[in-house]
Image 1 (cartoon, helix red, strand yellow):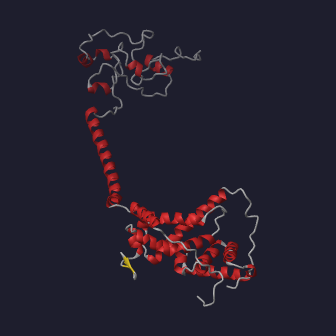
Image 2 (cartoon, helix red, strand yellow):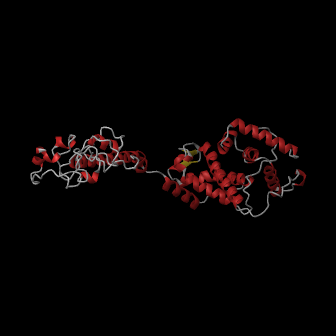
Image 3 (tube, helix red, strand yellow):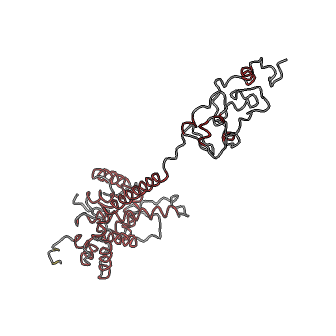
Length: 195
Length: 182
């Protein structure tokens, strides 16, 4: 600083504090002083958050394990027979054979003792000449019965527990009927183009 | 507590413990300069009272003294910084509620020849600082008007000491160009 007087220098106004002002400021300072309890809360809050998170997670994990233990696995095994009359475990997934006369299967009768053995009814009365089921000329849209949920659940067909899938699904129903009957298959042409 | 030679402990420590005598001593030491400094800062509101702003700063300082970790020399910078925040808030508030065209009316700097008394001198200094950029006006108000040191000014304004010196030199150059013998 230089010795010459500064024209910008102004004398400060006189402000003196009385007793009431000093007491009021001191009360403000004492009221805002943090107590040891408030200081301790700085590390108690994160600890409480960790405890809450861990407790909630453990409780959820325990409840889920108990529920899983009581109910068991709820997964569905693909290809399992969901018919109302459960069959033998090995019988449900095995193919019925090309003949389709499952009503004569002794294992099926043994599995259902309440159902007496009935004579094998013709599966498709409209086509008595067809000895085998796999063709199904009257149901070209349903190549296989086991995949049809309504037909597999019908109790009137206990002799048809399972039909094997068609060996060649891409073949036309007329050709399949011709293969089954041994004829030319032109009579069953749905399109009428056989003439 | 305190005797004629001074307190056994710094005033700030006693004030932190809630000693009324320490608060009175701090108020007597800094209140006058704080009001003088606030008078030099434009608030944008003609109805703003500098004494009210100063008292708000003292109240905030009393309630936040537990967070202040400085000594008696640093207390002035901390207190003036609180007051500056109040001034900035008042300036923003007046800018939001402004319904008069104050910016369209420039305030001319009075030449020194027209100054005849203390009141006119204070008004001339206030208008001269209002013509300067904000930082330069604040620096000159702290160093040349209120007689604070560079370190305290840097702490109040939140800038470095070289920045304070540069702003002061630029502001004094502008005032010399306006006719002030500084």
